[in-house]
Image (cartoon, rainbow, N blue to C red):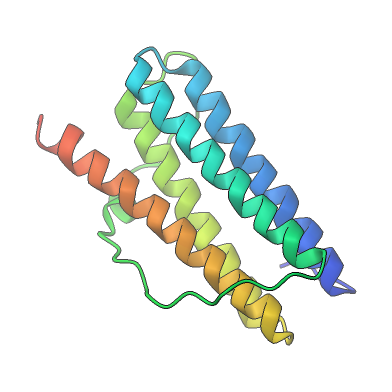
Length: 151
């Protein structure tokens, strides 16, 4: 993992990571043929924007309430083959891609929480890890309800 010289460097990295997630979900939304799929990915882009705003708020000196509960993990994404985004991606592939991305984000924020000494930053990264876990769970439920039940 990259070495940072100051907490601001870590926060800048996390802000960039969240912006990348916003861009990712907007790209998936733009490729979606069905309006309800497009709306789902737009909703996740907005949630990632909230994460980015939370990090920016902490960087500006605000504090956030700690997370009180852990999110269930169905682990469906752990057993699916990774896919690359394409212009003609189907819903199943988009869900697999989203699950993999959310799992990676969860791992990133968990690792960052373990690396920082500042308690406020640790709480921020644990909060973000739980938010990413919620997203992964939602995509796993979508996959279970719309893909597994159809097969």
